[in-house]
Image 1 (spheres, rainbow, N blue to C red):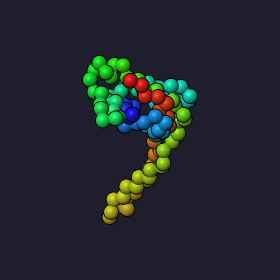
Image 2: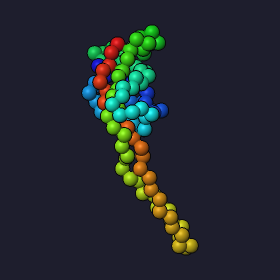
Image 3: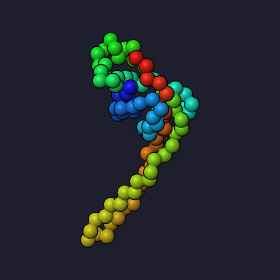
Image 4: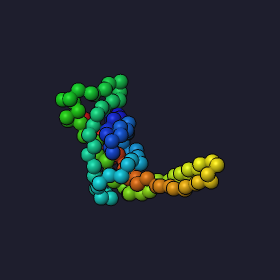
Length: 102
């Protein structure tokens, strides 16, 4: 069984036991998050109606808050010898899907 959930403004297709790196969530490490369920599927059937999705629940546990890989940005303008270096690391949250229930 799988589910399509919305976390951090994006949609993810998840299964039980799967780990995801998502944009930083405002939840403490070790706490449970109940993301909105957009669809449940598996075994050749799919639940997309409002009544079926009202009963569906997905529980995701926040494992840790971390930083992503560093991205370096280099800007250069030819003939003027102008250059600027910048970079950033995205703030991410590692979540594990514990249960998908219908």
